Length: 310
Image (tube, rainbow, N blue to C red):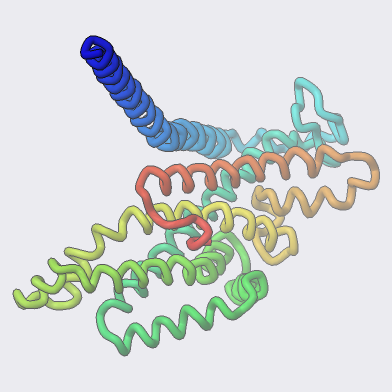
């Protein structure tokens, strides 16, 4: 009887040890899977962000470095369908649509850069101003709500008309209509930082509110601001193409995707589909690249949702 009890106790102990080993192995596997899962989003963000940067850089540099004679008219090559010599075909004046599209994309990226940086600067100044005092915070909040209450495209068209169009006028109009959402995020970050302990200590040490905002709060806003500026880029490019398509943006002498799409509308009924298809597709790819880059940086820096910036 004693031997039976001893054997059963030994078997029970062995079973408990085996169960512990299995449980430990499962925990190790779970931790490894969770670590791999936590690394994957950041790895994907690095890969896709790098590809987006390469694509944008290639498009912009190619468009800027093309010679001026690459888009000259050639009446002998009018209305040609896409071929190896002309991948995007030619238009009614014999101009190579591939070259025109690259130049138009380079112009759109330039407008987007000016507009996004201008909107980010406005958002930063107003966000820092909102942290200076309660009265300034009320005024800035009212200004943000005022701009957000106006339909986006309506205010953009009005400002573009007031500034007289052109590259500078379109960039200024887009900058003045794309800052409110980013300014609201910067303001919220500033309000949260004001309650931090080191900010309160800086107040007690005699530092002014402006010094605290610039020296202690601004470094924390740089990642959020950078991601927000990048996420303004695709909207700026699309809106530049939209108002140019309506005739209120860039002049017809300047290469722009909006002008190309506007001119191609008159020839679609004649079967010249390539005049609108390839430039529109290239524009969407560039816009998507900026969106992927902004979301990748958002993942790497751990900032807020991209929808808030838009």
